[in-house]
Image: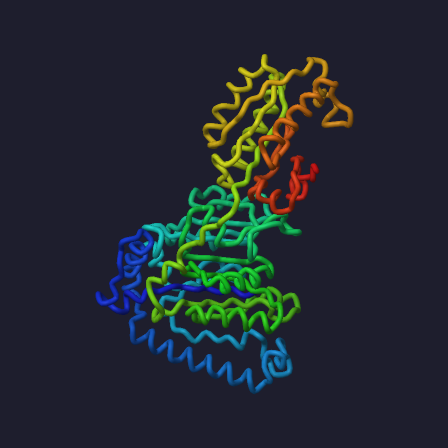
Length: 469
């Protein structure tokens, strides 16, 4: 587990007025204002140049030593005879005078640079922004960043139901039950993953002040994709690397260094060692050299627009006025666990099929929920004989053959009608309970894997969906 912090320090502060940039665009304007925030730092031009010279000497030494060893294939990643481990190849040679450790003692704390300056956001208009991937049951680092710098924090973790109570009560931290991947799409582990750049695009962010990642070895492919794309729109990156092999480690650091990032701190995570394992957990901190171009090119900062065909999908269900309590709970679950929590406002409609005589009561109950959550409800009349409705309350759930002929005729009518209007359908029972938020675009997942899905109540992602075709 290796934690890496990357900080972007503007060249503007080193050049004075001669480095003034065009402040025509909002992003450039906020980045330019960040220069004055960092100008109080002791990272002056001479210090930066001296640090860069030292760093380059050490990088040359690494290359020469590696060649002498016969290349990467000649490295023993955990040479216990000589006490040399893979992480020793990457030394903290950049000088950051504002270096500071934030968060708890031991595992969970992160090395940062220029923390006080983050209160004046480098790229987000006087509010700093942090993405934190992998939080589990400890949000002390995130809370300290919020308290110190007033950041808006988005926390992502597909393995927990919510944040710890102290973090869940903090309005500046937003939880997403979401997994990260090198590209967005289907995943055998978490059903669906989303790339960092696509997440930024979805949430409307162009620059992240702090990017913290602890994703159990997924980081290698994630950063390989970012480096290959040439887009690293972050000021600081705190990343936990889980040892894979020497080639992955050298490729990781080489990619970041080619993008002007420099190591300024290193710390071993002792938890694996205490358990009798080798030091597979080491924290690094890197800084984007202030001698690099600043502000970065807009091509680096801007999240690329995704060119994709709009997905034509809808949620649908069949209900009646006698089941208003169950229907209300289902609609409230959709509002908070699907449309609001995953920012799908206005993207997909909900279609409710119900007897004409019950429609007024259903509209009165559901309209306000839909308006608040920002989704459309379409109401369609169906005819179901009173005695043909399934008796779910008496049976304790759905059973095969429940319901009479007119009920199943109404189901068939609904499916046939919807199939002519929508490509992808999410069928829910009117008593479906979303035990946890659906923290991804279900219809995008359907289009990815080529299957429509229905909803079941459950505590794990795998419990939510079953293939319906």
